[in-house]
Amino acid sequence: RTVYLNGDFLPETEAKVSIFDRAFLMADGVYEVTSVLGGKLIDFDGHLKRLERSLNELDMKKPAAFDDLLSIHRKLVELNDIDEGLIYLQVTRGAPGDRDFVFPDPETTEPTLVLFTQAKPGLSNNPTAKTGIKVISIEDVRWGRRDIKTVQLLYPSMGKMMAKKAGADDAWMVEDGFVTEGTSNNAYIVKDGKIITRNLSTDILHGITRAAVLKFAREAQMTVEERPFTVEEAKEADEAFFTSASAFVLPVVEIDGAKVGDGTPGSVAGRLREIYLEESLKAAV
Ligand code: PMP
Image (cartoon, rainbow, N blue to C red):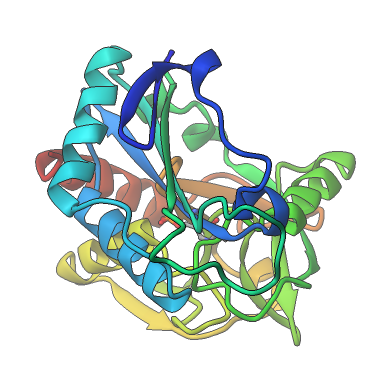
């Protein structure tokens, strides 16, 4: 696989980063994951805008211009012959000469920019769309700035392991009785035809797929309610689903062992998945 590191396209075994890199020592980095379908980038603008926001919130330097990032993405797709898959992009505050809690001077420490591809044949044709997934609920013990897409992913990773141990696929995190989001996705329920998902704040990541799906839902005259919901409410919902750039829209059929609706994927999730795939492919770059 050919990857990108600070201006160079290299074989993955030759891409090396300093042990003093702030992402390695302090999780001082942000990232984005963009899907590739038919060799094209899905929701690229949204991902780049969110990257810019994450960088601003953390006082980090922009590593490259928008146009350059687009051509790096495109070149990696071409070099690795990706038809369906993902592109991972990470920007870190770079590698100062020593470990220090104080941010290094941005004049002398350049950000580290890394991109790599992950081929995922069949990404758009995920069989899980027909079966749905099972989630458990766990306490959300993450920090308070979940709107910034940092590489600080230990708790979401632990949450996935808790889910696996419990025989489920993912975990929905709960704070003060209300679902925040999934370990790597935004959470939704459907009740009496209404699509309910937590409102944007610093409590959740502002999903790029969430924004697109809600826009398409409203355009299709579906009712959307942006507000927190409880696990109990989710268990009594007609359907549940989640969204993310790598999974698009996928149904949730069980929460903490209780069936959601009749325990099969719901029609609203199915319709939203179809619309999302169709519309985002049309707009792919
Ligand atoms: N919430 C969290 C915690 C995530 O990690 C992700 C995936 N990056 C999402 C939501 C979904 O965001 P997006 O649709 O932009 O992938």
